[in-house]
Image 1 (cartoon, rainbow, N blue to C red):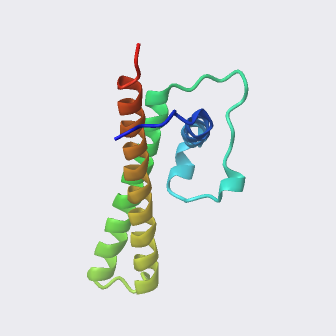
Image 2 (spheres, rainbow, N blue to C red; image 1 turned 30 degrees about the horizontal axis):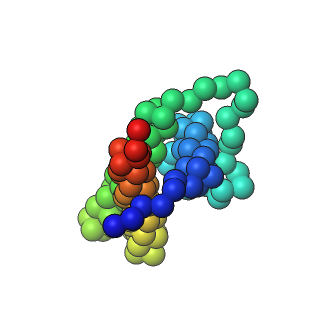
Length: 119
């Protein structure tokens, strides 16, 4: 299998998205915001890759936990919870988990590309 050159613009775009996710306040982790309202870190702020990754994983975990709580409330007969709300929250949690898996796959692929580079 021949591996082509690494597209640095895609890596930079992914890094920018991760920095933006890490810069969001903790209260924004519970709501999925449109991409136009995502706050951008200022020029002088340095965000580490590990903190960005941790923030994204915490956001996915929070969405999963919220969907579980809503499902449980519905199953216990809470009249304030609609089935449509449960299904929407479940779908949001599922999509965020799928996106996280895809990011992980891209990171593993980039790692393999780097490791296979001739020195």
